[in-house]
Image (cartoon, rainbow, N blue to C red; front, side, top):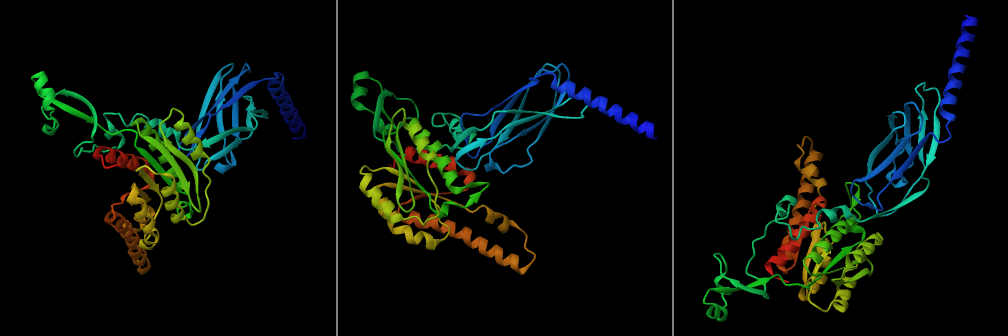
Length: 411
């Protein structure tokens, strides 16, 4: 057996030498590049592409270990692929960030093995690549033309029946069946000797402000994102719809004080200004000061405006503490309070109870859900509009409410 073992060792050393020659005789055996978006979209799946080009004249086995940003907390990232001789290949994977800020990619490590699979040669590419993560611009593109689409139902947008009409005159046109008889223009009818009617359009250049609560009530997580990030993503998309409807969009955030203010305007650069402001909103865990919010709105917003307030109330006691300030804002402006239903309570409510403790949990969960509906009714008593929504439906419900207000002409 002694000679046989030596022959085996020599054979292994020979094949090892051949494998080393195969992998190391070519200085640049493989090229690789990581292609990322210019910026990542928060809360969405973002495509990351790796391009590989094999310069060897034989098929290779590769193992890709990409040093993705620490925010994702992925420690077992690995992709195994085979690339034929002198060919190019693209590999795609997706990342879903859950917070805004700078994401630093480390090295792109490519381990190459020949068909012998005895050793691997490492190639390193694309060290320290920084990509910023912005509020969800993917949703922004999705709903870009939503204000003008004839197929809004495909996106979940309700078709809202117009109750009456606004008083911004657009044109005089011939009467067709179905036109409101109250809009007949008798002078134009007499001149044309045909029924003519006045046509009106939605009023334009109305100011719409989105007030984002960044206090501790908005730090509750849902599907990896804080409620604050859902509100920021919704505010970005809604701002785009507002500007498309020829209104003026503005925003500000508040907690202990009012910050990140963008005055309502309708400019070509307004969306970029809003995007940068939303990107820079920093969170805190203070209790939000609604008295400061009321005083700031009274001082800085003189024209009657639509104010969409993104916040969260869990109990009636929490609402009652802030209700005097909300009523004060609603006296001068049209106020819409957007808050969230606790979807995690649904699993407790719908779960079949088997023990006394589970019965107690179910009753308490139903009490909290009932209080949310009481909050809606309490706000309605004082002429304050509200949107009670689940976090994943926030953007659609906010757009629905804005379009409803525009359609009814109540601003």
